[in-house]
Length: 185
Image 1 (cartoon, rainbow, N blue to C red):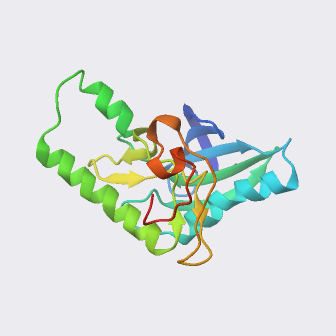
Image 2 (cartoon, rainbow, N blue to C red; image 1 turned 45 degrees about the horizontal axis):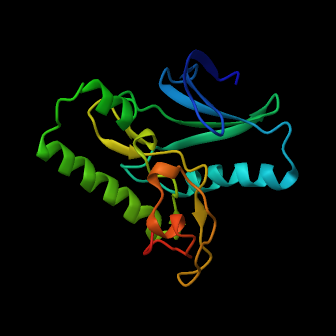
């Protein structure tokens, strides 16, 4: 953490907290996702490390970009680009009932689809797509983030069966406890 100066805490999630930091090397702002791994079993630690592996393997303009990761004081720290526009849920709430233009919605929808195509082409299932995991840059480019419950399939014929994700946003296959893959999710 010596390479970064903490600016402020910007979020809490089921798997950790998000901290806005400034790089002492280049002055850029990043987000560090801190995941407490101190009380985890070796298997749970390995699962936490999975998000790092997935993020390091994807590079796309519509996916939050991974910078580096390290362990410090019982926490796994994942450094990622900062999306100044916040998440889509905050953007929706800031509208106070005013509707977005159809053009803006279609533009965001296409960007989300491009991000999903990119990860699905790599046999990665995000498994927690919701407004809180869709981020906006300062120019309102959409970036998909939080791959904490993602799953990498070993082959194109493999199906996942885990009941995981945020209840309100589950796909019908997961909700009905059916096997799924990138085509059925």
